[in-house]
Length: 95
Image 1 (cartoon, rainbow, N blue to C red):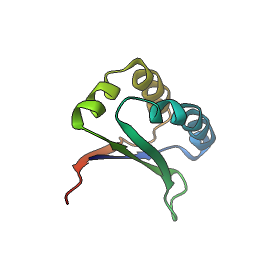
Image 2: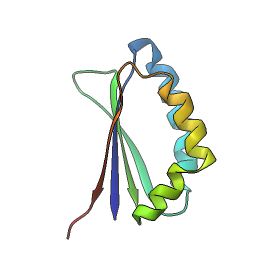
Image 3: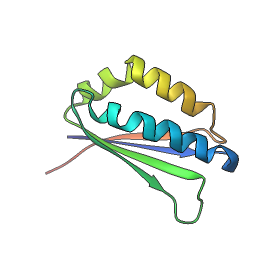
């Protein structure tokens, strides 16, 4: 199981736009082959900082998503709203 965490910081005026983008794409991301779910988390002290937490069956499934049109469109709309460079981590769940 692969866990993908992406930290995104937005201009406060762009938060509502990001939330619309995310909620419009969430069900399509979750329907992508190998995706086991996508959650959106908001920082308690910095309301313009969000993290997505997605679960993938394999690293290959995550890569296929990252090469997809869905990712390119969603990420393109999202990255235009960043106030800081995003950070991302791909982790393998250990048992």
